[in-house]
Image (cartoon, rainbow, N blue to C red; front, side, top):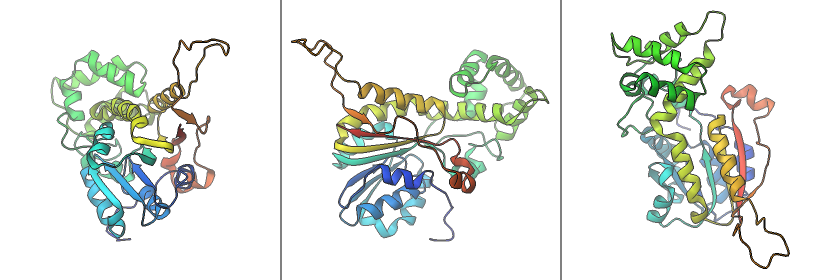
Length: 312
């Protein structure tokens, strides 16, 4: 590995690769390439006759992975885009039907640790949070241009923050005197809102998560990606999805629970009135989580949950 490449530890790597049931010659989609940790192992499994469609909306991460995976370049189709457009991308590149798909919905350490991207309250930098720098609205725009009610709804809906309106009011009071443009300016306001006796890290995580989800429409794009799966996957294709918070995990669970439902009409009924035909099978009803060794090696794996499905 080039020593100049940033280091990122892919979460639940062994579990994910095993779940996908990869074989030589397969066509696989990595919806969230990131720094290529999962894709490296996928490429080894599918061999020289296999093909990988590697998608990422973060242009910086995509360029780094292109360099890291240069030895596999004849097997990979790189695509700068959002996995919400998965059906269009697959059609455009004539990549379907695919034999396996991975979506790691988490942030990479590279993104979190780079202050200039504004994703983390622990790093100083502009309050940006755009995964794709072509997006128009930043987190600073939301903070400064939203009303108290709008800001409170963002914190409540996407951060599950209690007393969200109180914090929104405090923030908007500050913006009357000066626009908030830096992560540390927002951090200072949130910390001052939390009583000294309370843990200040939790509301900071909730506020920054809420803004990031809103800026990137993360829940909306996840839903659109899920809705495209049945049309771009082959029968028997495995789907592995790694989520990191309850909002996205709930969407994944509910979507596939609905897709796995079977006909509920009585067995002796001559006509099916519900018309329900399952399109996916649930492989693991309980999410797979990181083991003790991985938790020790990579603390950011603590909230990761892997769910596996199979196209019928």
